[in-house]
Length: 192
Image 1 (cartoon, rainbow, N blue to C red):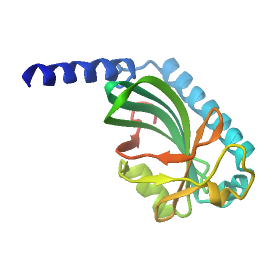
Image 2: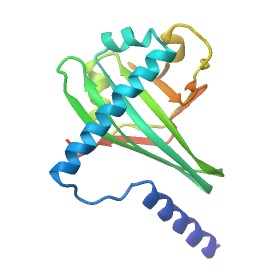
Image 3: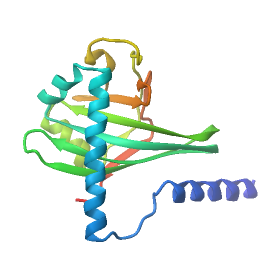
């Protein structure tokens, strides 16, 4: 039993190191470059969303704000992690708030998965609760959308909390299952 625990802890440490969870202080140039990369990812993610759910453009335009994240999920035998970064954009002030996300769990598998997430916030409270409280998602939601389906954005978005809607995208379009269980989101102090 003790050896299994040591093995699991060792595997978790390896996954965390390769996922970029541990990092050092960045120079001003590295911070600026990281911000630019996140902004570029955010624009690309929104364009991808608009391709598969065209009506999401108006939903986001009329929302209080939105958040976009790029995530890499790693499944290594019994451990799985998701690690990513993104930004929350306040439509009213135009301010970007840089954020991080991390998820860990147990599940059988081996592989790496890249996906994008877009949160849409109906109101100021929902937006700032997400940004300031280090929001933790403990719900699992199933979207009724497929990449080849055309339809209203509202049918593709999953409500994950009052005033908060979620789109999950893969290379093939909108994900059938928008799972965010056990995921923690928080401000990136280094980039803000």
